[in-house]
Length: 289
Ligand code: GUN
Image 1 (cartoon, helix red, strand yellow):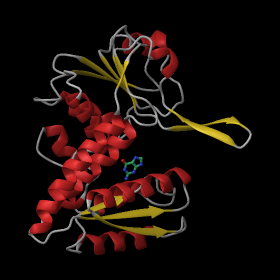
Image 2 (cartoon, rainbow, N blue to C red; image 1 turned 90 degrees about the vertical axis):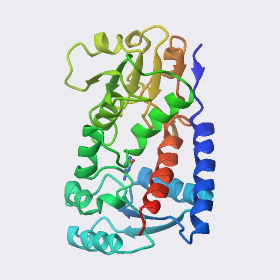
Image 3 (cartoon, rainbow, N blue to C red; image 1 turned 30 degrees about the vertical axis):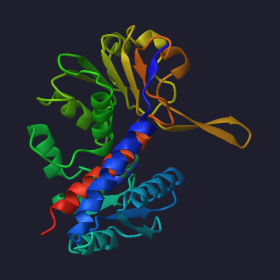
Image 4 (cartoon, rainbow, N blue to C red; image 1 turned 180 degrees about the horizontal axis):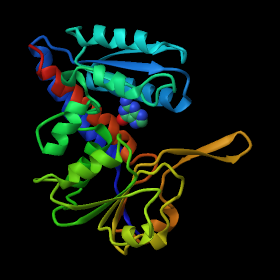
């Protein structure tokens, strides 16, 4: 049976570290502030935003929520981002994704000041990540890296296989593990929905990261004995009339019998994403002039 990686506990540890940093900043009169923009009524997005705000409160970070109906125009959103870019007390700006179809996500993300882009999604910050320059790291990949570092699971020379090529997880995760240094130095492969012989590649992974958004996609036959398995999926599945539960992208019951380490869903990667957001927001506050 695999060792469980307790993301909730490690996220709490990071939150405590952030709270201590916020305490130091407050002595200098700086209270880190995060602006969260929520568009529409996506139930998952609403839950994520609520959890992000709760975590801010725990860490002593001020958070403001700006909600719009799904019909809001791109222009109105861009104007709000411009206003937030110019607000001294707002250190971080997070626009919860996905956005409604009529809004160009790339345009919105590019409008956020790179210095306030605590999601690490702005093209300038993505470029810096690829080039190995210091920047805001996307929260989910950074959270996965922290889990591995804090569990003392080495990545150097290991084969990291990432399932999924999203801009939020798959692509940045691959570049993060490729970088030189602690938590990096891995040999990285990305596989995705169009990959041929996907299972043959995932079976070669020392560290397998599942971020494909398909419930129970990763089966035991796709995993090498003693592999480290990181499950990024958060999928709500119906289990009866009016009843649902959260499951990951990994068939936990069977894969956990084969893996050396595995993250649960919930309580694995999810809390780490939020903890890294707190960390990024505090780093952004340090850039205040
Ligand atoms: N939607 C799913 N994950 C994320 C995230 O990390 N940040 C934002 N802004 N939206 C998301």
